[in-house]
Image (cartoon, rainbow, N blue to C red; front, side, top):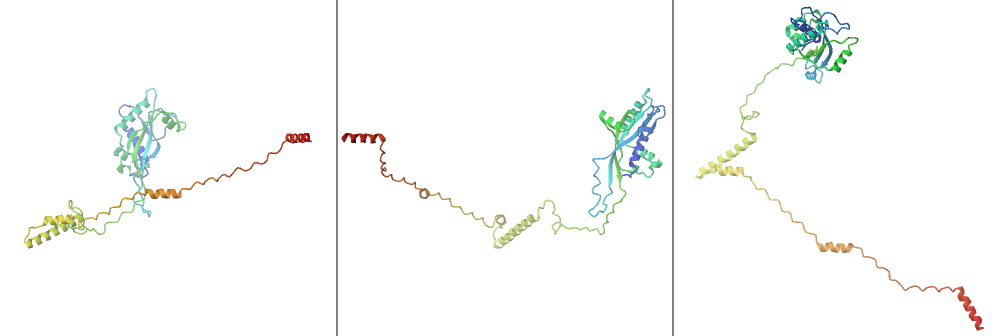
Length: 319
């Protein structure tokens, strides 16, 4: 857990770590600067450590919940879990491949020392602008992991750096940094009166010994044993043999046999005669056709004109 100076402290410690582990491959001075890549590339060997993004750690972002009670009382100091993303670029004479040699030294150092050492943190914390940082006291150490970026992502990253020419670079992620809140939680109340009770097995409220079973089973066994002892005592007074087995058998057997359920009478078959009679009574009687009467007399046939003339001619002949 650290204060708000943890982010700047990690950046300064990373620059110091790279500067102190350049190795014997370089016979000239190398300048390591924790700053943005310059718009004009320098001529002398230079390594730039640029923090371009800060993101919350997905695994530990909710580890401090809940921080407050229902009444608003602070229960736990809130802590923000962060990951830091660095762009490390190298500059130098291109004819002697200074930039490539510097990048090789950076990769070797962070692969060999992936965890930020405590002595480097303490040494970088002596700077005036980092006075008061408590990163060296944090329990969680910072680890550096290389980030793989394709051409498209690299183009976007360098494209947001306005008027800055591209240079050979690598990207690393630093995890995990905790930044604590300023408020301190209210301490819990101490124990006022310790109370310890010792109860034997079988006492009310005492735990059941292993293998003893439940209280109901123990009560059943006690009642069976008591009844068996009473029967044995009665048999001994009469001069007979003990009847413990009989008593146990009677205790295990149920008191009364369950009554048999009454048998249901089989359903009666429907009477066919009644069904047929009902069907006949409900059927409709077909209506009889009315009797046909005699044929009505046909109307007299009207006389034709030819017949009248014939009759007239006959009368004239007779006259």
